[in-house]
Image (cartoon, rainbow, N blue to C red; front, side, top):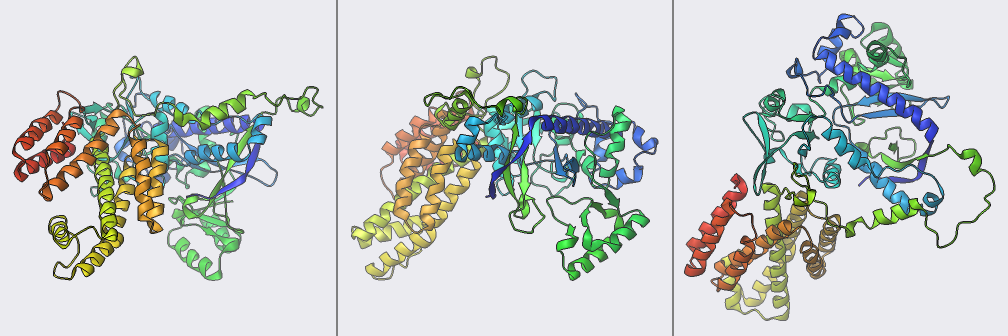
Length: 630
């Protein structure tokens, strides 16, 4: 959760055009710099940027030397941090070219503003931002010459602070959200492992830092990346956005040279100036910084996210003293820098990074081209029943969930309606377990109901304890056993199931609707309040929503539900024929001419024998397919 400031930042469109031109100029020069340092190194040979600065950067990647990209762009998505100086002029505070984040906050803050400030939107010409996902997808597709390339977003997972944004963009762009374990490299090509087989990936929008993207090329202990990814990249069979090694251009020790880069590569003067900066590696400037630490802001050259910095005016004498020691130990590692607006939410704080409690506010770029005319008295009043175009678009956007659910589709089809949905094996596995845990919650709720009503006899309790593993002492009196089972259900079993449901919903976010996910979120809230019956009733709403998802999503979820019923029936020595037939019904809906069809044979075999051994064969084959592929 990130704090939101309802008061927007207002920028006139005429001023925004100047900012846009300045950012475009700067990013063009930085891309030229990146291509240069990994090829001819002309700017270093000319003595404009010292080679030692480049090689000393922790983001410089020798792996990138000599790689010829299909299109020589290294940073397709860039984040430029701007501030106003005392005269009101916009200046660049720093550049972010590695894996910039925050655009989902921009889109969500606009959604909130349109709801809370609807009157202002209906009477003000505020430029829209809702088309960003479409623009981003076009930008990614333009990074290769291949027609209709297959795009995927590579995420480190749901524990990453920006995971919401990864899932959000994947959903909005209609592309799969993948983890490192979803991808394999064969013959220097990258493939996703889907329920229908392997699908080649042409463009990877990675949200993982360089050291972790390929354990064979970088950190060998990384479990987030893809083994062999860099070999496929060097072979030109996949585009990585942003390119590895891009971070050297936003190294803070190179920030002072960006104006020189603009003049060197473009022959132009910077449209957006840097702020005055002191390089602590230079003795004279280091001395000035040491003498004025209580008045300056000092940053690590390799730092990000607001970490590792000193804000002199708000720091204690001890903090300044400790920082002085760090600065003297490694002067070259520090520097002093004299769409979305970030804001400090704590009074007196100067740190706006979301990772440290900073918040956001919407930024309104207002069309001021007819400002003079708009100040004149209006002749005609807008009719009460008249809805302008902007209001109509806002209404449509607010009801977008009523349209067909957006799903990641396989590229390369002339008619998108004919393109099959891409469902990753890992996501299918999460859907199966979502169905299983949902069904288990129902069953445990029913046990609680029977315990409370006194409908369970001692023999039935023993049967459940022996076969389903409840933490109950079978040698105790019936009343004690019931109390122990209730405690086990309410304190252990159900909370664990609710947590597992939430985990699987988070992992399947890329293929289930936003409204469905919101319904599941209520289950945890109700369970946390101890209202387990209400949590189970909420599950009925979730099931109704899942039944309306894409048919293949519903299919795997239903497989999980019926597999849970089947397993429980087997363990409790109940009749399995009816459940097996229902399970077989959903197996028949799986992709044809794949290994999934083996499950039909095994299910038929189990229906005939009703033996535990045949169920174990069925369970093992299902797990193997989900792990190894079809």
